Image (cartoon, rainbow, N blue to C red; front, side, top):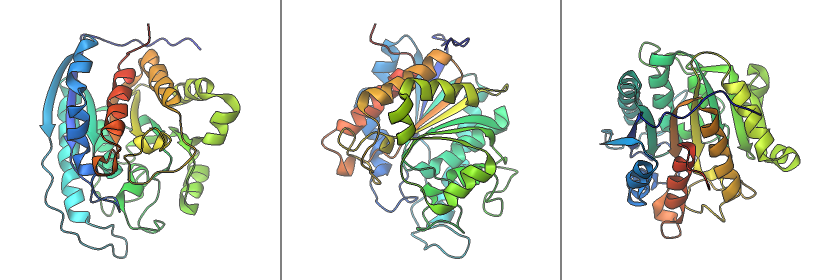
Length: 307
């Protein structure tokens, strides 16, 4: 399908690191931002013609290791503080006209990223590329881990924990929310997708109709409306044979080329206003394999192509 958007190579790209892993069961993804940078992120983006500003990592409090309780995720207070800091950073970045790229860190950081976007853009379209929907709430989560709840929070189902004055809700438009590469869903997430009218493309859909058609449809749905799209890419969307350094791997994921095609189509559309890459865990990586894949995916989202 033809796209009317275009990439602006004069725009400032801002790198924001979020060294957090308390939202997940397996620790180590807090080292993800540094690993992605060490793979050559800034130089590779500059080589595409962009101006780049790396703002470093946001301040994240020490993990208090507080257990989950009724209606409350694990390590909540420190994750709340980190989410607030990231929301402020994203708001500043978008307000300055930059294109923010968040490197993480576990997927709980998406709560702050989406809130910061919503402060500037209002409820936005969302392309969520992930093996998991992350649409639980404390009431439906089987683990109590916040990295399985950011979509639930963004929909407004956790207002008691995330004050709408700081975390506008809903920060995403459910009718413009598209999941891509799903293959491991909890019962509560299945209900959320059906009842909220969100669009989901599973790996079975990709097998049947191909990545190109899935992504063209995803962009068409998510980009309806004036506020354009936030893209959230969990590295576990890629098959663990090609991206082993992640805490919740699921067999049967995207190939390396399918992941890049997804990002290339997003770049071609020109509809994204922000991007995050999450769940890179160098502690369990095969050398720097997964960090390098993450870095290369970011470059594809910014327009890097074969020719």
